[in-house]
Length: 319
Length: 223
Image (cartoon, rainbow over all chains, first blue to last red; front, side, top):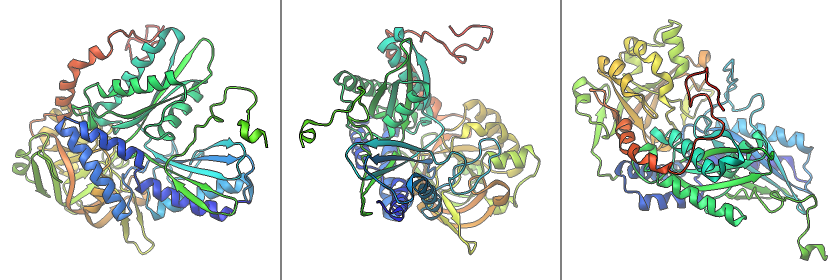
């Protein structure tokens, strides 16, 4: 039984880590951009950001003043049991979000869409979002928080099979150029592309592809992995760098996730995780111990399974 | 920070002569007093006619489009963590009235506005636009804040929309996006990138299903 106090304490620590510490994989990717950037303005911007990450860590202050709309991804091991059950866990995540907003501090971004009511704690109706996944043969719970900006850099479009790969590239370019000008997307970004699923699933997969996969990871389907590489290169050949200034630093990496969709369609979404690509993950074990990391490890062979039954790996099945 | 870009330390309030020396693309650090104001403040002050929340001299003469990641302590003091601008183009419609009542001559934000707005609204008020860098040098900017002499309209608008007055020192970096003539750095850069865009699209054709926005004629179908 995982103690609820451990989950809430870990969730608070994750909120602070996400807001303050740039993940190593993104940092390494941005440094590669800095090494090749020829545009003097774009290079200046990246240099300022690299110094900003250091300042954030030294001062223990949020790296960006727009601390995004904090949200949660929870992965339950199939054998995990949480003290108080999922309702207690949701309360703990909301409580940790509110406390971190006051104590880190984060900007209380969340307001009612119509009445603009502000609780000053990033908690409200349907906020923060909590998404769930499950994992076989495990008794831990993985908590991941993502603090992503909420205004620019994402778009959805219903494409059709006849639009083909060229149609995908075109909509990808539309989104990058549209939101890249003046740097609205806060690039260089981790670009996530969701392909297929229902409309809402397409959006969800694309967002998860940008926020929950680390720079350098590739889709297990070799042809999709090749398309990820190609889209990354295309994005960096627009001629646009940081803040939309002339340059080559647009895409730190591109990740594609797919889901089976209606036979007549090919829905697509594009999401851009920004210069403050804020994510932090912890695994909380049955004894309450927590280990922290920056790779959410959200997409797995299990989560991407395409069959009815989940076949256990041979070695385990033989036991 | 080390850069080959021209860098200027600017004292606030800045005179028109001070601003005349700033070319687009110049790196600027600020020292002095400035304040935050965004849509909630503009709507209340300009549209609803409430006027300024305090005397202009107490607010400063530079308007930052942001809200800090900050908290008001129980003893009334403030803890400011990071500050980062929000996209300014959404606020253009209020600025003419805002310049009139605020007397400000520097707008700081994210992404700038169009050169048309600069020529029609900024230039007559001898005002320029400074863009934040990144975006998201929130921690560096947070370091430059020395004091929070006041927060206005906190109860009326909430923490994120309130007017935060900030006394700052070596606060930056910023880039000069518009000068006193109304030129725009972003538009200059867009123009440099534009010639290469057609070839990126070579071999592709418009999506089978179009969307409104791709045609402004609403009598047209989107198929």
